[in-house]
Image (cartoon, rainbow, N blue to C red; front, side, top):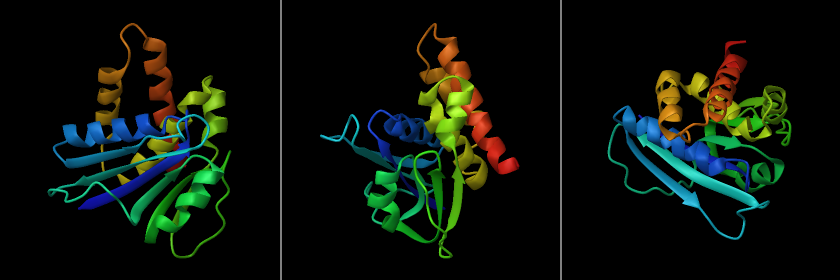
Length: 178
């Protein structure tokens, strides 16, 4: 099993954090992992992205030309990375900020992650809503493991951040459960 994921959005949407917690959780589950962040002039406001590969075998390169999954948080990212998804791949799209048209070659999960985050009281957790959706659909990493990673990575004394991220992850997972 090898899963190649490109995560993209605007700088400030938590793209790097999403990739980092995903990679950390996979590593803690004993999988081989690479995380390739793309830092540069696009950090605040422009398109930001990272690449995560999760495998049960050693990984030769962290670079992803064609992804199994795209997690897209805004429309410029959809335009930039939409062609980088394999046939029969999965597109997880934030319909609050990106509208993917129908495409019979791929599976599209399109939900208003930003709107859900606002309802939860923190727009910054749209990334975690998207992550919950992805985790429930692909079942590559257990949500319980992701919650453990949140607890480990959460700033000391900031239970409010931990709680809203956990709620966001659960909300995203429930989108798939229906």
